[in-house]
Amino acid sequence: MDKKSKQFLYEYLNNASPTGFESSGQKIWLEYIKPYINQHVVDVYGSVVGIINPKANYKVVIEAHADEISWFVNYITEEGYIYVRRNGGSDHQIAPSKRVNIHTEKGIVKGVFGWPAIHVRDAAREEPPTLKNIFIDIGAESKKEVEAMGVHVGCVITFADELMEMNDKWIVGRALDNRMGGFMIAEVARRLSENKKKLPFALYVVNAVQEEIGLRGAEMISRRIKPDVAICTDVTHDTQSPMYNKKESGNLKSGAGPVLCYGPAVQTNVLKMVIETAQKRKIPFQRQAVSRSTGTDTDSFAYSAEGVASALISLPLKYMHTTVEMVHKEDVESVINLIYEFVLQLKSGHDFRYLK
Image (tube, rainbow, N blue to C red; front, side, top):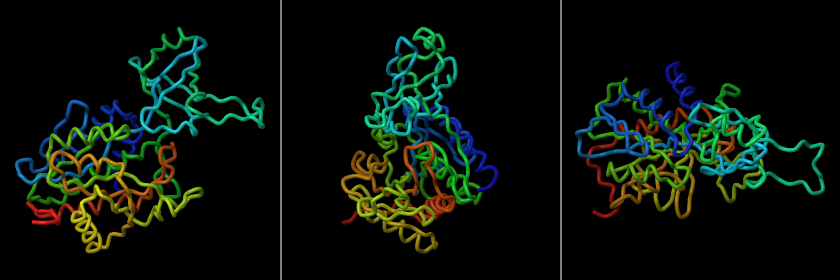
């Protein structure tokens, strides 16, 4: 990762991009990829697509999602405390003592998730954090003061944690799910441009919104693009740390390479081509099985319109949906390399159907 990539990574990851409110992050992402694409499209809900060789008929997508989990202001007490509602899969158990940013029309309002001190809690009847009892304190003494600060029901809330690096090997922070994906596909576009590679097909570099609440951004943009093949990237669980059950979640390890997914939504011939590419280029990879769905934007692309030949390349991640998500730098580079090499070896018009 060179200086330019690292600067983009920090700017992009440290910016908040909550589900439904992704525009500021999308602006950063688009500005970075503009030199490496021929044109771009932004849909009405904010998904952004950078297009390389747009006049070609055969359409290939590489995709990530741009949004992060967050909270909404749901109720303000007369004493000025704020109760919340999830926006996506936010984890109530990690909330107490976390610093937050409340996004208002007046700007950011700082706050904290409060919690009663250990000294006053009854150990025999201790309540765990739940959505019903976690609350935010913004230093106000009344509902009127809260509202005067610009905070109202519907304001979106994000954790204030920012990116850091650990032990020279790890990238750590909130919202690596899946802003790392947006970073990686942007790096693929940059590499294609700087290496002066000419593609025989149109490449759509897609940063979709609203994945965290049901893959909605990918659902919309897939109908608009109508691609022939899609390679999606997201995160998946590293299962090596305590409290994971490998019999249920598989044996996946950060630092061991991208994870390739097997499941009904993954088109087998596309997956085989991805595996062959990895083996030929000596890119390490791991395998994962899913049941009914991948739980990623791959599902939206796969089942869009008449069906899109799709595959999923995942980045192993520790502590998903916390403020200390961790990814290994070598895995990030390997995912970029694998998508890049797959795109280079793909021929325009390739027919992935099982029967012809």
